[in-house]
Image (cartoon, rainbow, N blue to C red; front, side, top):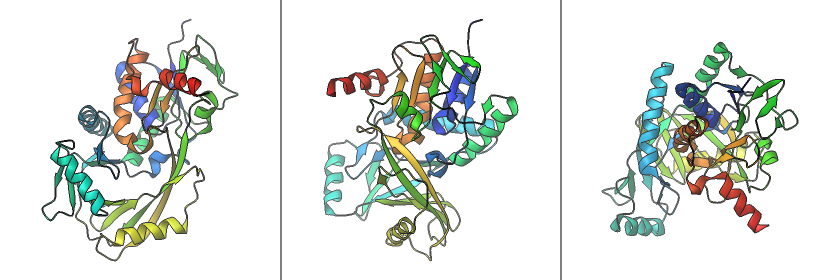
Length: 345
């Protein structure tokens, strides 16, 4: 009997988006997940920002990714019975004169259009197209759905259990035509793709009360603050490269509160602290595709832009699993990245 199912390993944002896309395409699958204890998606603010970093750079292919993401999260939220996509009025404040000058030069050359315009007082830029996505709600509701219909296997998949060959994958007695690793910072991706220079990083965010910031507004100056409901805000995020523990720290809490008090009015009181570990590659772009000679694929290294990238990449994966070829942009291709790693060695 021909194996038609796909095994998705991990039910963070990548695995969830892929599962939804396979459902919509009529591709049978099962998903292995041991929950979200280390999931960066559960800890993340779900911030969508089309302009990134201190150098004010538009996100790769943002003109395509942003409308796709908005449409995807709105449709998925409607299907799950709750709103996921929340538009934001985001003001990116300049940290110093160098940032202000850099942004002015890029705006003069039209490099940030149509996603950034200068604020009237010269203190920063307004970002257009920003939003936050309720990732914990998405992951929790989808887990309930897949638990009920029998596709969720509530267990981790280990390297020793995944028997991979050129025709498919066997896991705990079940046969699949392939497995796609959506494990974020988990060790499994590094075990199957040891050549890739994965860079894990620990991040912490806070949920505070007392913030005098209007709902639907956000401020960013290195640290960001998002008002998700009246008097409440989320503040983040710290970044510790190479650190993979998920223990919250007093140092991170103190830093985030101090940073936020510099630009958010109100008596801020911390009511929750979350930690996640995310993984990226040196070029800060995701990786997707099959490993040559084996039916093991990677959908990962989403880094800080996972909320924006995940739906679009899940659609590409769905197309690949439905028989399409040449679906991976060269910049994201696992095959290209592995070849590059081999040349470096």
